[in-house]
Image (cartoon, rainbow, N blue to C red):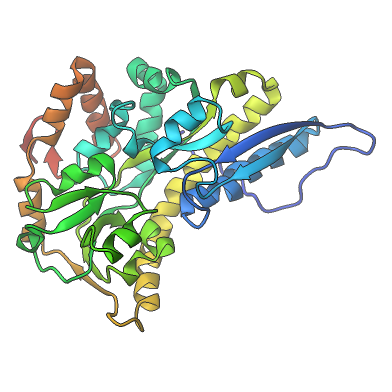
Length: 358
């Protein structure tokens, strides 16, 4: 996974010769989120399209995709079980909301301010999936085969009212996805569990007063309309899940189709990681542009360095608590994750596997 696949989707597909019969295979692909969310949309434009391209070049098989995006089959709180139980053949598993079932997958949720580099983070997580038996078993035990990985751009704070520092968060209700609520500890904010599909309504109805979220999700979900004050914190990126296929569905596929899905998954992961880098600033600029004429125009303010340092310092030993809750294997996994980031040139602001500050 460390080398870019380098395969473009553009170009004319090689179709099977006349008279050559292609076997058609029906596969359902689904997600709890709509295709306007970039990493879900790329399931169509990259994962599915690349699979089709590979199979068309060989001319032996073709897939009849049954698409069920945008929560047509299940919501964000059921992404793991829905693929496990075969409600869909292939689906995006939102690991951030599956902390109880996928504990090792939460490692980035307990190590904020460690990296803002999605390609590096997903490379490290993919390597761990291949080399760490406990991590691989964490996914396979749920009747899943992982095909590609997903991550996030860096997290910031989006609020209905402006904030100038950490002190302003004290007592505020801030929505956050799953384990990432831990990033608010020490600020005095009250975390409200949620996801991109619920944030808008939560703020609009007063369930929360802002969100801990990311630009590539805020833009298509239009959260800036109800939370126009953007505070750039650069808290770090997070591993968010995987495109996975039900093991029984996988076992029923011909080898050539399995190979095509595997290659397409790698292509998707590489393209998605780079897309996170390329589109974050575009998304923030677009949020400002679209929000310029609303009743409260969108503003973006960088959290001062001293406040950012105070945020990191004020966090409890999140990683240590996570290790204590998940056993010796978690300590080994944490060390491997942090070592992987450092080996790739990242400089975590906090030495989470040592408990101190860098």
